[in-house]
Length: 584
Image 1 (tube, helix red, strand yellow):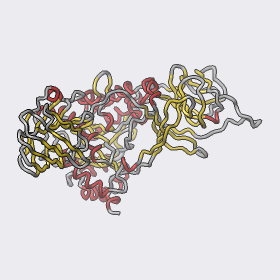
Image 2 (tube, helix red, strand yellow):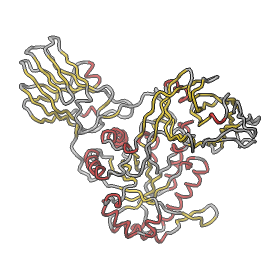
Image 3 (spheres, one colour):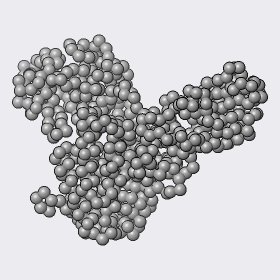
Image 4 (cartoon, helix red, strand yellow):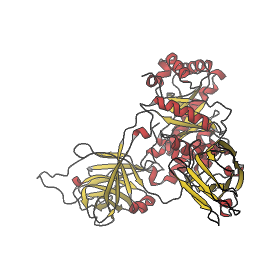
């Protein structure tokens, strides 16, 4: 499993090269060529692209055009080209609004390595949920209402003060955030305030707010901390339709003031104790060091473990577990310690036709192993960590690749008599395929979803997990939330904007859109040029808890308490979180 940062649109390394001729001169021009098979002449640089049907096409940089390929003259020498790669038509249409190249650059040595191309997308996405148990006063906008203008509002970075003159007509303040929504779970509103009079507290959804008809929640009558139950209607919406909301504070008829220091939404913690789980990728750990591994799992408090299970050819077209006795023994000994053992399988190419066939064979082998074992020596299930988005072709036709992913999972489910779980990145919550929501299409085929929620900010962790937890509660699917503790390197980001001349060009070749990065700014003879506007950095410590596991333990305890209110929450999954790291 590789840490998920954002949708990977292009992944490849293109090393620096020169186009020097034998006489010391350089070509005045170079060519991009798009070929159905390997180009006839050896290219300077090339990259293969898979189609979802398993066929391949090659995009190359060459000194001369190849008549068997589609060719594009670049009007610059080959040694001026630092990097090139395809982008989807949808992304290409938005490049004019700006594009970010993310990766590493060593102009003098290894050239340019781009790990990700990020293009702003005008498509509307679902609003993020506000975090639980966080002071929301800095996230809410306030406006006063009332025909007599008897309410005066003062907001600071730490709170708000509402001062009211005496009057008979309704007046007060409306607090709302148009960019966010409330979590889809039973909630309470908690206020901490100093007051000199009784202020009415109300809640309005989108319709209630427009009609100025908030639902009364109660009154703030004394200073201190007070709790009000929110109506159940706030979390009735699912999918993309989530109502806006607002909180209201209404002045009393007499003069008075209210100083609000804290406003948060919270919920009673769930009664279940969620299970933690962990990945063990090296089979040698359970094959050769089972005692040490089981002791570590007990110490870490992880009653679920995902292990890689080697398979071997037993006959042409047939696979079996390589070490069935050792696996059965490990499962039995783990069960004695109340630890469930799952197999974990994965390969981005599993969604291709050949990959689907191969993974179906592997599923049958794992299922056959279980069928031949007593209950105490059976795998608890299989997790599929397939990650097709790691292939650069994924972003070129995302809908087709996602449809193939759903088809792959559905086929694997048919092969198994044990539970099936999938590991997916957090940014899949809002994706669609085949005209429907991706998660909804997956629901009939999965018993659980493990969300690779790789961030370290507790607010972001809550926001990215909430759509899955709400969906799981509706569909009856168990949801685990995974955190990252392995090494993640910092990466640079270069932000480009449309300009008369620039280092980045958008060109077309045979109907395909290609980005070309040059050594220096140049006007593009055709297509779009983009100039570097500024640089930034994606910091690894924003993604992984590596080197800060003490803080990770505190965040885990906090999130388990918050997330346990969702009936779908099955626990935290820990990636690269080991005892050795905790003890040093």
